[in-house]
Length: 131
Figure: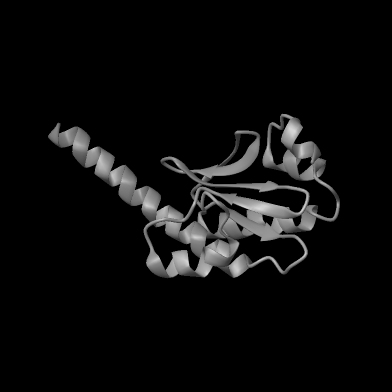
């Protein structure tokens, strides 16, 4: 897909360079993540749209037959079970474009990653204070 080889400077540019049929899906994913992570900063990282708070919360990317969502979900057994049908070899998620995109699940993942990111940042602060 053209978006994988082109360097974009914003999520808007990434979406605009994607195939027209995929653009509404990408806009909706962006909106869902924005709702779940209102304080996150939008960025492009590894040539993919990403949301960052203390660290990267989520990346998403359009491919020929699916939307990828990264990093893998780890640390919540119920959420891991819910995402299992979409997990690839390394745990990264693949949402096939020929099936309904599970936006509510993406929102759950984003909310979980916000909590996880906050806990990780707090643990780093405590470690620096005690070290």
